Image 1 (cartoon, rainbow, N blue to C red):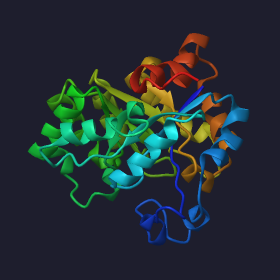
Image 2: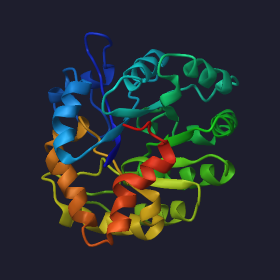
Image 3: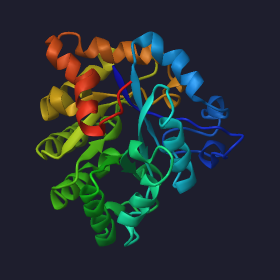
Image 4: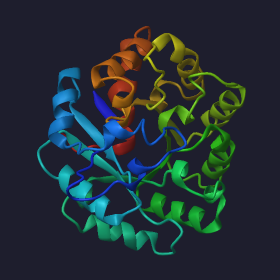
Length: 284
């Protein structure tokens, strides 16, 4: 199994400012358990028992130094097989930024780029002409773009995917469904629209009810399955952020429970095949 979405950080190397203030999805107090380092060794301790053979580590900070560190981790013989880093898509030299990463140790492990809209002050950032040109340069470099958006930004995400058809977009966290209450109609319409974009895939990640419940998440999973099909869905733990809700094994078990009724080949696509095709993680 490939875990297509998790994070790592070492507070002795780099601060994580987002942990010291309220976020749209959590308060500063709720984030307190994350105010420590989470290393590859920590990841392997929780992921290996769940039959995870490789992972995709995803950036947290808009900082090239963090991406460089993640690439260095991915070059070693450990569970991390690919990196989704960060690049400034508003600059005209995106291709040069990517080329510079590829010259670094582990640079060949760069699989994609992310700029989380959850922390972006401009809600229409994806609509900027400079950003869409940056996405075209990403596509030309053979990289995908992870979409981490609020549900209300799903229509903009679909418009962006259609405007840059050569770029593969990966929707993180099921597009932030209202899994703990709220009107899911707008979310469902947005997911259906994104599913009509052949260049968009979706992660079963980050949409954890508290307490964890496959039954409560099932309507959102079924909407995503109908929109994307198993060949455009992939599993991601969102560890260690998901540990605020439940241990790694419980999160993994919830998603396995959701897909258990699918044919074995379709389960394989969600747990391994889609991530292999999109992120091309290095072999073990």
